[in-house]
Length: 214
Ligand SMILES: Cc1cc2nc3c(=O)[nH]c(=O)nc-3n(C[C@H](O)[C@H](O)[C@H](O)COP(=O)(O)O)c2cc1C
Image (tube, rainbow, N blue to C red; front, side, top):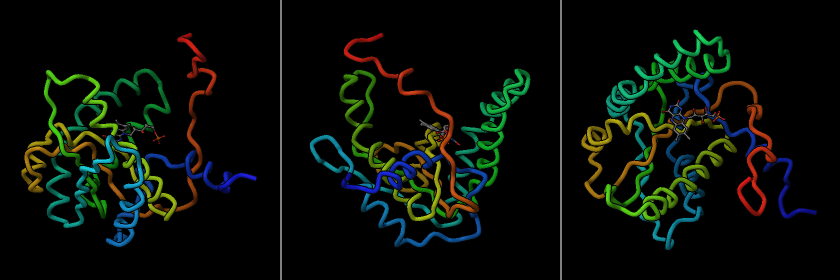
């Protein structure tokens, strides 16, 4: 007897995937469901329990269009190049991935909610690596909880970072103050169609080293 229904929790953990082609662009996402998922995300571990977060949730069509331009500028040129290389190499799964990324980029402005989790802090090239790890480690677990909570409610998302190439411009667009870092951008919509299936992943024995590096 386990304290949770592991069949269900394991299914949630193994099928929360990056969704691009199956986002429902036509169904609005209610503020209440997004608020509820942020509430659950806030249970995630974070350094000193400071919770120095601000989740900027963009549903306004003009603001979404502005962000989408920056996102596209960041992702399309390198992804198109990667797609060409993957095609030349006959890498079918790679081609599918690149095409899906470009599809989402093309329709980015249509995604009902664009969520930008921010954390208080600044990046400094002299900063000790431990502080950088602590900074991002204090929000990325919450981001994943947010994505899990979305999925369990029939929504879908993708972890993205491409817009950060224009982080200053997006900060200006959204009035994000100096001293807060955008950490990623999660496009959120309802999932169209059937449940998702677990993706291919490495076997644990390939990625675990017991007791010492091996
Ligand atoms: C740090 C990071 C940055 C990512 N950036 C993007 C992005 O800008 N655009 C995108 O479509 N997907 C992005 N992804 C999603 C990955 O492509 C995806 O997680 C990976 O291909 C595995 O697929 P899965 O999530 O469906 O299992 C990013 C993922 C991570 C962890």
